[in-house]
Image (cartoon, rainbow, N blue to C red; front, side, top):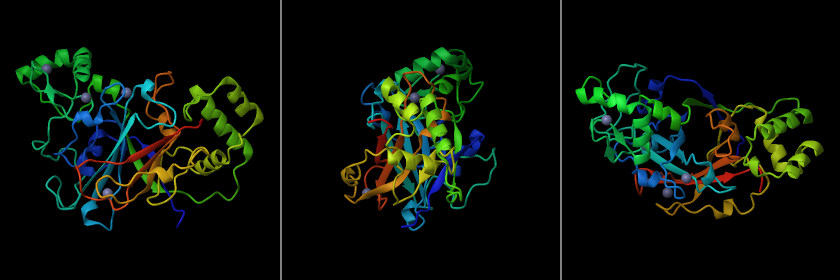
Length: 354
Ligand SMILES: [Zn+2]
Ligand SMILES: [Zn+2]
Ligand SMILES: [Zn+2]
Ligand SMILES: [Zn+2]
């Protein structure tokens, strides 16, 4: 198997260019849903622990060139923002969904769209979506009847952060609501939006990474508490990391060496390849990857989200924020078509400590 990996880096981009018709890979913001009709019900994207709506963290556009059914194909990852639902080496606070469409479909034109901000794109077939987070919205503001919400929590938050004033203009019919406008309340709950640019990883640099550079990366990660759930590392362990040098974790060493080619990478994509684990405690993980629940076929590694992403999405350093070492995604090898339009896949959260 070749060792060619694609790397995802972030770029700022105007929201309109991340519209579903451009099939974006992106971080944060509202989901740019692929199938615009069978959008999942908020019940499927409610945290099982705290029962709050989950927020989209990223979507990766990853078609299968060889399959007509997967001419368009997007993987979505949702997370519960509540830090207390985030536990070590557990992906209970995450949901991952796969959606795919043939080139000829009822939502999008056969030919690619032009970069035209004002091009009309029909939204009348869309179900109502939450003003704040973009999930499906079963309820609406009873006053203006023009603003929709996934949950009472988001309705109350929107009212407090500006809908109270906006509601009257909406009632008078002076303005129209636009799904892609992010309101103040939306900004307070959504992750910062970025385009995810995916490109080939550089070859290994000729000079091997020196140990000091590795130490610096490690120390920075520890200082910023951005490498797995470091808040749960004991003082003495931290001392050991910093005073004695690189811990006896060859996997972590390899991890650091490999990411030093692109220190800002937030994604590694290698369909059918091998994940780059952050630490050595991976025994039995791959053996426990369940078969696809829709076709009973095997799943394979597709991509992973890197801890660097935490630096870009304003997660914050407070103790109640989410955290991860790596998020490793396994999907149906055949990318089957059965089951619901948005199909569940598997995500594994590995933290730096175990
Ligand atoms: Zn939760
Ligand atoms: Zn919502
Ligand atoms: Zn209203
Ligand atoms: Zn399958």
